[in-house]
Length: 175
Image 1 (cartoon, rainbow, N blue to C red):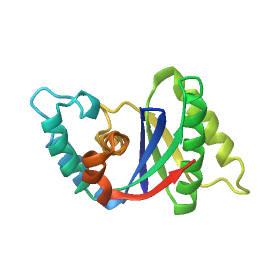
Image 2 (image 1 turned 180 degrees about the vertical axis):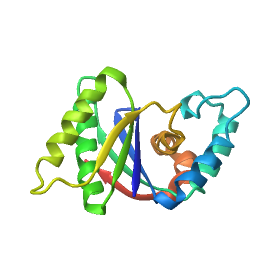
Image 3 (image 1 turned 135 degrees about the horizontal axis):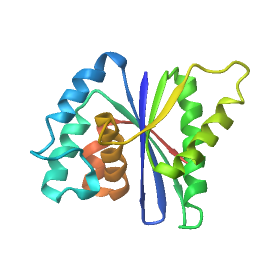
Image 4 (image 1 turned 60 degrees about the horizontal axis):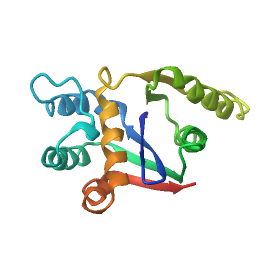
């Protein structure tokens, strides 16, 4: 399985979303996502979309062959990075248990080193090294990162937004 990770912060909550896609569905899912781009658009970034378009995108993304796992915790601006790493560590443990082979995380440039340290720390707790490859990518180059971006945003927004993506959410872990 391949996993794609992005986050969202909202109203004192930090949300990490892991969207899991079967390898056989990678190419068709990429094509479906690319078809959602408007002319001249390089990526889907939920925060930048208008409400009417967000509704359309949320519905289309929820129908894709991906299951999303939500990891959430309360946070403050001072603890945001620590909270992110707590969520990421739990997600990596769950991905190893599920047999994930590849994990792609939305890049935050210089801050990627925090994620790498967390992943190495978690993977180092296993007797044999799990066969998990992890990379940071820009969302403009990796359309499958658009799934966790949208799901995390909708989950954090609550109400009808959360309802729109709820069919594609497989688990919610409150830390």
